[in-house]
Image 1 (cartoon, rainbow, N blue to C red):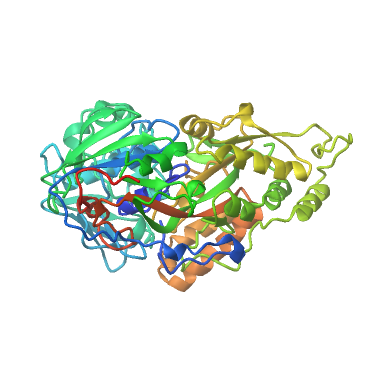
Image 2 (image 1 turned 120 degrees about the vertical axis):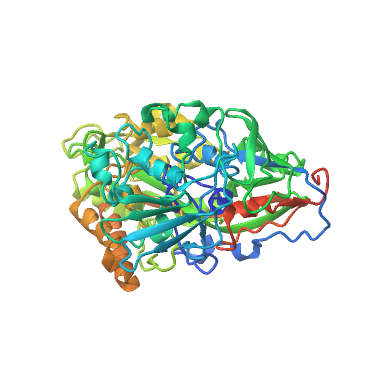
Length: 602
């Protein structure tokens, strides 16, 4: 879904996918770019991020071809689910971006515009979208990318045996989709293949999110058509021999470790300038040394390792406001697969709103951003990020650091220390231990988790790291997605994608709604934000203002940090621009050139 969400995206990822896919866990749709840099916190927590350019300055003559080395920064192997329909983690996405891009190009406000692999237009009543795929767009196996392939992706995601996480309100709004999902119909009546390259999708209700959030990835029917839907995600075309239509194609792969890409000379916008790309996993703790020594040409630099005084001199840094935020979530229920919705548990340990609010006020996020991330992350106030300048409400203060207020909330709710050990019992007088799940990562992952645990201890809460350790990325999300009863609180992040509509992350029918929070007010506001009335910008702004206020009040999750993302490029790389809306994302990769046979080293 163009503008879908996902587990923690990097700037490279978000920019290159013409911006991007569905939610996913740390991972999922936003608006303005450079002008939307308003932050709700103190000036002390904001560096002069405007000093970072958004395009490379290298003007040296380019060599012919060459191979770029791309560093996938992760302390865990990529899982190897290499298809947009099925993947959910950012490490897999960073592989996918090179060979399987979005069909659509977007403008600076992340609405679809012409120039991509497909165009998008609407009927006068905004109920029918027409997608026209470029006549020259072909899969790397030589077959044309067809309207039938595009329709097939919707059929797979809507199939009751689909085991991915994309099926949500965007899909159920398509005419006939729910009957198809319930096996009451063999086809989706609202999807019509007009010809080999043109498809029409009719929606039950007009939804302004479709302009930025329409699913944007076909699935090759000739390859997947004979594979049962329940087995697709584990099939060879996903795990071993994936095919795309982007500027590069996979030549060889060591799953979890590295991928060798070669240029797709039949790429519809012209053959890439590079001969290929070698992708390899780089541990976050050795990123700086890897770029200093020329082991990688292109990498997303963790802001925790940014230091002006010790930066390698053989690189150029590009910077942009990240379409992402970190958050702390509270487990409030479970995903009911039979109903296809989230169900809250009134007896959940974290069900008391005052407890959640108190934990929010106890977190000193401004200090985290300044000291652990060198001012390149700032304390967050809302679940709509500042990049969505039209919808982000800077007047919302959110959960600013206020431990005294946190203590007052706990006292009033009956969480008091009854045995004098300095730790609070629950309102019934029982011992209260809260299990906190956090991911492993770079060198600040452990200090960050322990900092929050200490914040919570300062207000009298006994919060313990789940299993006494940080969780590896894939294990972390496996437990969160499966609603492991041992998890009470978790720290994660979302890449928002390009659509401001938060229903895919927090809707009743959203599998990415990991807290499992639901409420009638939430249902109503999310519905209104995607209604026909919401084509009126003022109306939609007001709806999302109310939604932001509701989420602060109910606190099912609490945003912690907004992000500024840095891309480190070796000085032999030229012709690359990360400005939002500057052009088709896949073309940015295709246009990269090198000015030397070997990387520049310090």
